[in-house]
Image (spheres, rainbow, N blue to C red):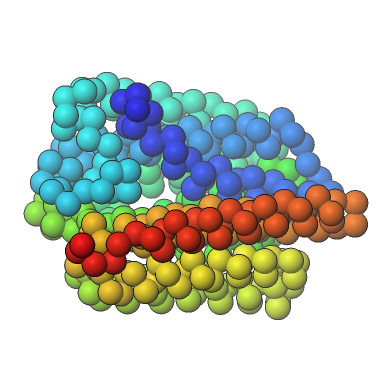
Length: 331
């Protein structure tokens, strides 16, 4: 794999791009408003900020020594990209690239703010500042105990709300509620990926949730958040914040159960927890897709949405069968 692709972790961009797409199609589903150019710019802009965040995290984790001290990293899930530690790309080059992506995301944000409203600029500033401070050596959101919360806020609620605002010009409490499952599941990705980093993070003074709680208690926290994700999907449909078709996302329950069960049983052996890492990442992808597809179950697009949902469901079955085959024992 190209070292820059590894460093930028382009394969992880779905964590920000899909919520932005969901916010855009929610505007279409609720109010019939959709501007393709603005949707595309929103996706590219948030993708640039996300890429900048990935790069700056590699740079800061190098400065604090977190990645160098991590002996249990499971690439690509945790431990950074390793391009700095393996002397493939210099720290200064990583820093410059991060700032370049932040600048590109900011330029798009300024354009959208001029066209659609300045609240977009505020959301973008929150995203960039929290990305810079997430693991910054001196002022770290992780060490303050709010890093995981901000990631859920940035790549869940703010991404959906911001994309919705770009299309409609206003915010909506219902849309914020619709984004809660995505906020929870993206925070879960972060937490489950902290398990293999536990020793390195603790040695470098990086106080992630797993470091603070310990692996055993953190595994229980994972299960609680998985349950809350399911509950939030149900509450949104029952309270009519979303359409009843968003209950399709409950098809991910077997995948969520597998991930929670694996975390509870294998929390102290990162290599045996890889099924939980893969399961929660896959759940994030599938929940996003189910929620996006739920916006198209109107009469003109019902058959297409139904067929697409069936394909997503088949994909979930394949993923579940595959990760269920990951050994749970040390043999």
